[in-house]
Amino acid sequence: MSKVVLITGASSGIGKSIGEFLTAKGFSVYGTSRNPQNYKDSKFPLLTLDVKKNDTINQAVFEVIKIENRLDVLINNAGAGITGPIEEIPELEIKNNFETNFFGPINVIKAVLPQMRKQQSGLIINITSIAGYMGLPYRGIYSASKGALELLTEAFRIELKDFNIKMTNVAPGDFATNIAAGRYHAPLLENSPYKKPYSETLDLMNTHVDNGSNPNIMAEAIYKIIKKPNPKVHYKVGEFMQKFSIILKQILPSKVYEQLLIKHYKL
Image (cartoon, rainbow, N blue to C red; front, side, top):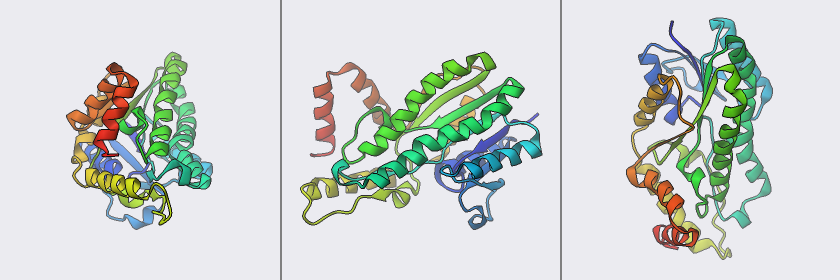
C-alpha cells in the first residue's frame, strides 16, 4: 500500500520538487498552497492551506483523511524568508515570520497527530534550515524561527515515542528556488547606519540562492528518510562547507566562529 503524504507549501521550490519525486515513486501525495487555483499544472493534487489560518489547516487534513482514510507522512515545508537589520525590522514582520515558520508547523502537527495516533504510526518531517544552527547577520529572525523549530522537534520526538510517531528535522542549505523573491526584505534606508553592510550582505545572500543546488537533491534525501524505520533527530542537506559550518560551530570557541562569519560576510 502506497504511503499517503501531505506536503505544505508544495506549489513551488523544494516542496514542489519533493511532491513530484514522491509521486513518481508511487506515493499518494497531497500538496498545499494558499492559492492552489494558480497551479493547475501541478502533478499532484493541491489543497488550500494557509499555515497562519487554523481553519484551512484542519480542512486540508480532513480532506486527505476523508479520501485516503489515513495519513502516513507530514512534510512541514511551508516557510518564509526575512532579511534586514533586527533593529529596523517592524515587529509585525517579525511576528508574521514566526507565524509562518514556527507556529504554523506546530498547528499542522497538532492537526495530524490524532489520525497518526489512531493508526499507531506516522512520520513528521520538519523542513528547517542550516541557518537555524547559527545567528546569521541580517538573517537573525529567520535563523531564530528555524532554530526554534529544530528544538521543538527534539522535544516532540520524546513526547510522541509511545505512539510510534516519528519526527525529524531536515535542514537544507542554499537551493535554487524562488525563496529570495518571496521573502520580506527590510527596506534599505538612506539614513540607516546599516545601509552599506546590509546592502552588501543582501547581494551575497541572493547570489548564494541563485547559485544554489538543485532542489531535487532535497527530494531524494526526503525519500530516503521516509524509507528509514527510525529516522535520526537531525539531517543536513547541502554543500559540504554549509554542513561543515555546523560542525565548526560545535568545536570552535564562540568568538573564533563569530570571526569566521564576519569574514565570510565581509563585515
